[in-house]
Amino acid sequence: MKCQLCYLTNLFTRILLSKLYGSPLRILEVLGIYGPRNITDVARKLGIHRETMRFRVNRMVSRNFVRFHANIYHTNLGLKKVAVLAEATQGYEDLLFNCLKANSFWLYLCRCYGRFEGCHAVYAIPKEHTAEFEDFIGQIVELGVAQDIKLFWSTCFHDVPITCKWFDPESESWTFQWDKWIEEIPRMETKLPYTLIDPDDFVNLADEVDIFILVKLEKDATISFKKLAEMLGMTPQGVKYHFQEHIIKRGLIEGFQVTFLPFDPPISDMFFFTFNFADRERMAKFAQSLLDKPFVLVLGKILTQNRLLAYLYLPRKEFRRFVDSLSKLIRNRLLESYQYVIIDMEKTLRQTILHEAFKERSWIYNHEKFMSRLKELVESADLR
Image 1 (spheres, one colour):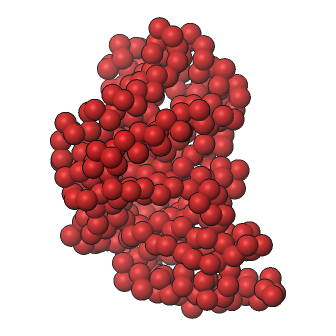
Image 2: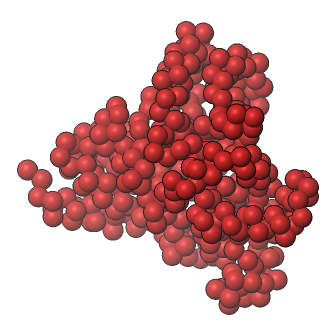
Image 3: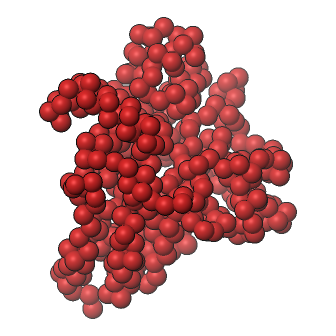
C-alpha cells in the first residue's frame, strides 16, 4: 500500500494558503483529539451542525486531503516495535529495500539518504522472536547487501496530533518560533504519555476478531460496524462489543490519526531523527516540548535508554534553523547528541499488521521462510 502521505496534491497546497484555511485546520485539530468516529462531539466542540461537519469531513476525504487511521498499540498485541536504519552497499540500494521487505512483519519501509544512502524500516515483531529477527537483519549484512544496520527497539509510537499552534490566522502562514521553543524546554513537565514509557511486558490481549477489526480500522478509522459485520459474518452488535469491550477497554489502540501534511510537499522534507540525552529528566522535557508542535508527526522512545526517535516534517527553509536550535540545546546541555536521515517519500510503503499470521490467539513467525526469501533474493541478484 503506497504511503498515505503521498495522496496530498498541489491543489491542497493552494487550499492551505486560502482564507478558509483556519477553519479546516481547526476541524482537523479537534478530530485528532476526539477521533473521526465521534463527529457529533467534534461538531459540538466547534459549534458546527453535525451534518455540516460530516459534509466538510467527507469532502476533505474525497479529495484525498486527509485520511483517518487507528493507531494500533502493538505492545498489547504481544508485538515489539523496532526501527531499522540500514546503510546499503553501494549499487545494491534497491536490493536492500527488497531484502528488508522479505520479512513480512514490516509496517513501514522507505529509502533514505543524507548521512548515508540506504533504507529505513519499522517492524512489529512477536516478542518471542526478537532474537530470530536480529538474526535475519544480521544475515543481510553478512550477505553483503548492507554495510551496516542499526536496530532501535522502541516503545509503541506516539502520534502527535495536528495543532493550530504556530499558525497565524492573520497572515495565513506558519510562524516557526524556534527561540521560544528553546526557552520553554527547561520549564516543561517530566511526565511522559504512557506510549513513551517502557512497558513491563508485551502481552497479547487480542483474539482473531479483534485483529481483523484493527486491520480495517488502521486502513480506515471511519469504517462502520455494519460493514465490518458483513466482512466477518457477524452482527453489528457483535462487532460493537469487540470494539468497546476488547479494543477500547484492553487498550489495543492508542488513538486515531489524522494523516495530513501541514506544509507544502514540493518544498518540504520528512526526517527520521534519534535524540540522545544525559538523563531521563532532560529526555522527558524535550519530548513534552514536541507534543504540540506542527513539525512533529510521531515520537517513540528507545527501550531502556534515554533516547527518543522522531519523524519530523519541515519546510526546507526552516530545517537549518531547526538544526541551529539543536546546536543551542547541546550547548545548554539540554540535549547530548542527535542523528538523522532524510526519508525519500517517493519510495515509501506502508502495510498493516498481518491478520493472516494470527491464529488461535498467537502470532505465526516463520523465520525459516523469511531467511529463505532473503537467500533467494541475493542469489537472483548475483552479487559480485
